[in-house]
Image 1 (tube, rainbow, N blue to C red):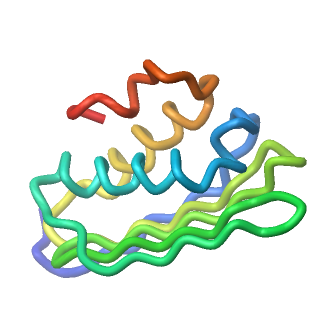
Image 2 (cartoon, rainbow, N blue to C red; image 1 turned 135 degrees about the vertical axis):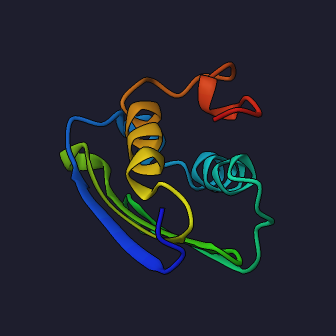
Length: 113
């Protein structure tokens, strides 16, 4: 893997709307994603829109994730900037989690995202 920064983007469709409008669940998911990569979350910004949707950004030393959601369209965009990590795998993991209903026992909320 290259030690330089790489950008990975995805336009995600057919996602579970319960995730896409839940700022707290998205915050926990993104924090656990950063931790799963062995990094420490740094600064973050999360904003819930009215009537629906969330924009989220989280930054760590080797990983930056931005997510913007449109629950009414079951869609989101995901941007992953990373250094020395597999950004495509990060997008794949997040995509699979966001496609299943949000429950209190969602697999995304386990330590191994």
